[in-house]
Image (cartoon, rainbow, N blue to C red):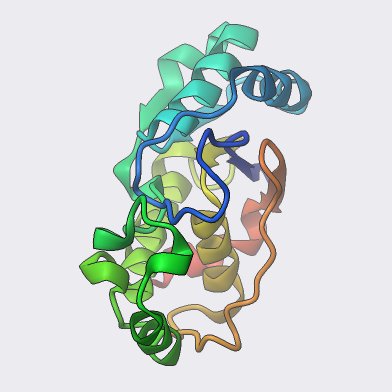
Length: 199
């Protein structure tokens, strides 16, 4: 059975303490190149590359294709792999976002849309749709490795869906780990296949 690789973009060029999700910020070029170098040796022949269309992920996808030109024909931007949309919070220092707004989000993590953007329930739904598509078409039902160049929130969503299916998390339950910048998580498709076939 093949693998779904969840590769997080490299360190973004954004000030510490700033809320960024859908905000389209670039990543550090040197660290992006290093991440591509470190990861490229793990891929099998015939892998499929799918990536968020945000700049920091496009940079890493470009760098991977530079290392492995055979990825180019099976490279696909996918808006479902974007980070959460924080609406009017995007680009704002977390310290300047009104505390009652943050508390309201924490109290209803699954269905509250932070900053009027996207709820976690909506994000989980689109990530599940992306998983279903990748299982059926990219991996050919477990026959090919698939790489997602994506974001921490998407990686957490995949893990949640794998472990809990359609259940919605509370704030206390939303404590799943994510790879560091330029790092990755490998999940065997045989641990995801049943969920894909029965959304």
